[in-house]
Image (cartoon, rainbow, N blue to C red):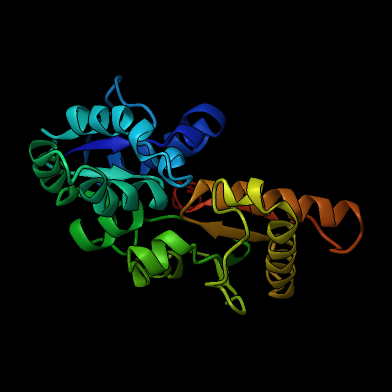
Length: 245
């Protein structure tokens, strides 16, 4: 099966090991991957702040780059949601582009959703021997409605001790530009999320959005240095943990 990978700016520039892990997992599952060189930001960071017109160049580039793909897999739930659900609204005054965006929206999947719902795989043969909890990010869980796939994949990892998190669906406080515009509120939310993670007893928090993971990792490290949390807790993308053998 041939798929096109949408890697996300944050992963491409700062966490390339996450992108490589995603590629390796999908290749082991029999996928033939294409990573288009002309892909850039999906435009979400502009639209989150209300700059829809400024986002259109990036949006149209994404459509042009990926519109011939049979399947598009995104390592970012938030980017996948933007492409699947927001492009048509932003392009509603340009019928031709809106139609192209509509066709594209039918082909994009979040990483865990694609593995479980399209490939029909719930056990990728991973092994990870540690205590793990899962953060249900806003975009993946509520906006895209992807609830069971990541949990099914985690449950079938050999050696894992999965520990449910209280209020796992609560926002981590990042929210893109929200964390800049509302820094004090964002910090309070991040601290609350970090304490919920620590309260599970897990040594690793897993998620499907690298932006959330970056935010949580920062707060967890800060609280550990302040001796509020008594151990180091690692944040890992679900692609990373599924790539462990």
